[in-house]
Length: 241
Image 1 (cartoon, one colour):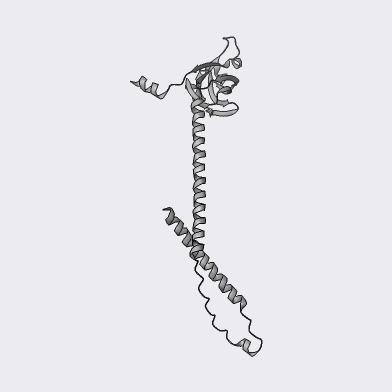
Image 2 (cartoon, helix red, strand yellow; image 1 turned 180 degrees about the vertical axis):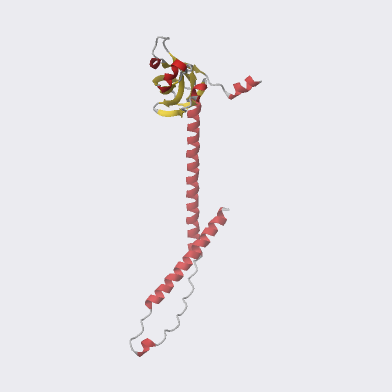
């Protein structure tokens, strides 16, 4: 197959070279022709152009040299492809080892607020990068007692979680005035992810204080952290039996 490709490319090169050589010969012949003399003969019709001689075929030695040069270029290209595949394979192994040997984090939001507060906006950030943003003025976010914020691979070490919650007051009768109130909660929490472990952080939104605590001071969050070993696929298969 390599010979066929090489011969095809060489044939194309020879054909292009023949055209170039033929054009060069024709240009040389036209450039060497003497212009017509001035006088009555200048108005005479020009003589028909003499067709140029066919280009000289390439000898066997030149053909062999070009073939070897082409084979060398093909071998260099194959070597470049081989090195590229080796680099890609090494990169894939590095990434895979980083995921397997790294850590994993799971962040869960829990809502334990009363009906007096409707959750309308949630913003979570991990190490300064937003990971979860959702807004709903209808307050249906608060109808979910629990929802997952993040679950994925993470670099082992310490990480900072930033939580921003916004509530809209909700009430009836004598408490109808709460609808015009907005309550915002901002909190940060630092947790550690050991290598090869799963760190689960539950962010619990609750109301602190008692009946005498002002409504604007009640919304708060607390954190429950748990570190455990990840479950391997073979262990999951055994548990299903």
